Image 1 (cartoon, protein in one colour):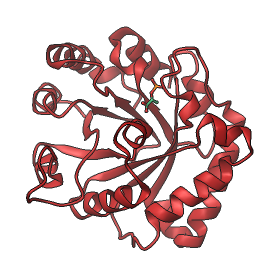
Image 2 (cartoon, helix red, strand yellow; image 1 turned 180 degrees about the vertical axis):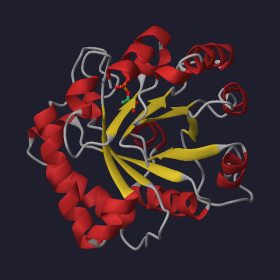
Image 3 (cartoon, protein in one colour; image 1 turned 60 degrees about the horizontal axis):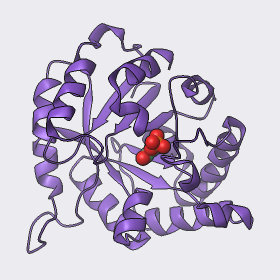
Length: 254
Ligand code: PEP
């Protein structure tokens, strides 16, 4: 595992041809990605094979934006983790707040998705975070603790498993207004999460299999504030990752 990880979530912001164009621009980066940075691109499902093809001779990894909690069956519209792994994905974003809000995704569903991801050697990028109202009534820590326990409870981790926990405060995501969690708060949250993990796993397992990252309006100017924090392994980037120039500067600044 490299020291730092930058994950690009293209959401549904880029259509097919735009995804190919941005992937081609990123592929040019090759030697300019800092050696300790692991770069993961999460395109839409339909763009995934094309992006994988463009990035095949680079170290850049591919992730899915979601997956289903079964491998096959009568699940209209869903995508199998087996296909995702076979198409070259090594990561999958799971439990993004946009899915929780728009599609009523619950922690129970996220739990099932994390399990099947691990079974298929896909590293789950588990998104957790409080909304503005919860934050204002002082419930941030409670929300995070509950989410983590409900998602990870009962899931055993084995050698070689790779789990990323992304603190994505909902009020900071796609704010478009430069609203983000201050690095000191992210550092504090990383400590809260560590306390929960200590109840679930032994210290060696946490050290070897779990990384903590931040996501929420990160851009080329703010990236360094997060990547230089000791317990933060990296960032999940939405909007800024869809603009090649901005994203390339962000990677270089990491
Ligand atoms: C995200 O969607 O996970 C995200 C962090 O988006 P943005 O960077 O646009 O806030």
